[in-house]
Image (tube, rainbow, N blue to C red; front, side, top):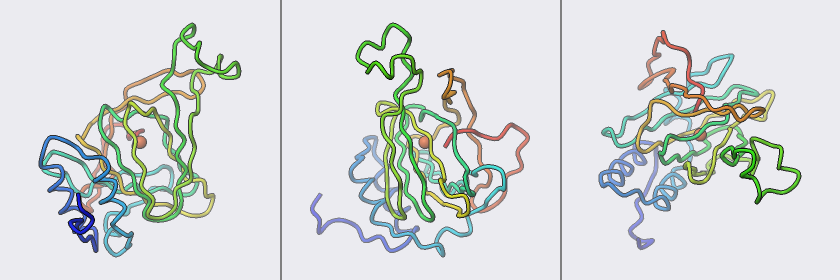
Length: 210
Ligand SMILES: [Fe+2]
């Protein structure tokens, strides 16, 4: 796409409008979605009505269901809150930092003992091997899917909150989580703390993926 044809994104509604257009088709242009997510500059006035925090763990707050093509949500991280290591259920995952700072730690998929021949000696006995680690600053965007590995997201600050915008395509209702020590995989439902700015009362266990 020509630079001159790139859409102007002045606020969150502009971004959502462009996302509807992009996800109207069946193909996902990862670079272009990354570009759209980067073009939006975080303004708390746009998203504060979705920003709902819990004292004990991070929350997932649905902003838009994207005509069933994608889910856009705000994740609110209190100080030191962290996710489990998880996959993304064969979906595309775009994540943009809106406030605070977050650290993303990527892992290889666990490999059975005996199939680790291409690993360094140090990593031979490890079930979960870290492959990358990065600090996100406000307005940074990152992308992951299952072919790129697994990840854990954490708020490294002991005093500041963080807020991130996540886009998943297609939407999913469960994913896999992994025990860092044993590599054990389990299925986990993903649920919302709020939808469209309204608190959802949950009877089921809280979600453990993002
Ligand atoms: Fe994730």
